[in-house]
Length: 245
Ligand code: 9WO
Image (cartoon, rainbow, N blue to C red):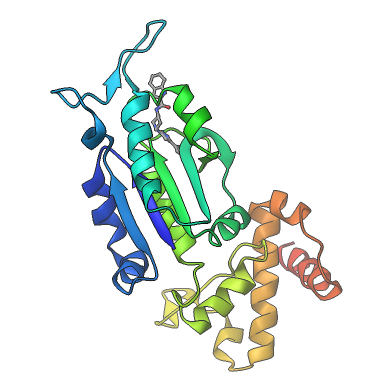
């Protein structure tokens, strides 16, 4: 899969993406990453990419033409199955299932805004969609683009090992994770739950499902309302509720 990021801070994107799982995917060419700087497509002698907002007010707005030309450059080596996305708090809230859908694209062009935003006509004319990570404001779209690249790269075939992708499947089922423990077995009065030391794989799987259901019920009841539980899951959740009582 190919990612193209439009950004005034190309080093920030290139540097951060070359770490860890995403870095490895770029190295072994599962992922191609290109970053395009709108400043390189500004034609005046100061390479102007921003201007004062019509109607007045604070700050600056990114100009249409350098953004348009940067996206056009990214599309020039066009992959057939391509989408252009602007990242902003006004966008559609991102979910794991939207990211899964996007992981089947061959090219995703992510536009990272700066300043007080971009000329609205760029969003209307050049972008297919607008995505939001959540209801908060950050200083620019770069960190949002990096999160999207990270989350999609993890979903690509062969990026995570087989074991991990099986794990991931069981966790993209709309429940929160069960608690994890490693050595030592005891920290002062806090011992690891006995069942995890029992070697009884079926009992461990049941305990983990019960914890996942219970924690989702406690912390994110909204997620549980969207799900239909199996009879076994209903039983485990009922047991969890009795236990906490
Ligand atoms: C800054 C600002 C200052 C004064 C008045 C209004 C203002 N709006 C903004 C603003 O929204 N700046 C944005 C910064 C412009 C586009 C890129 N920026 C951004 C993207 N902030 N937060 C995101 C983002 C992206 C995806 N998901 C969550 C947040």
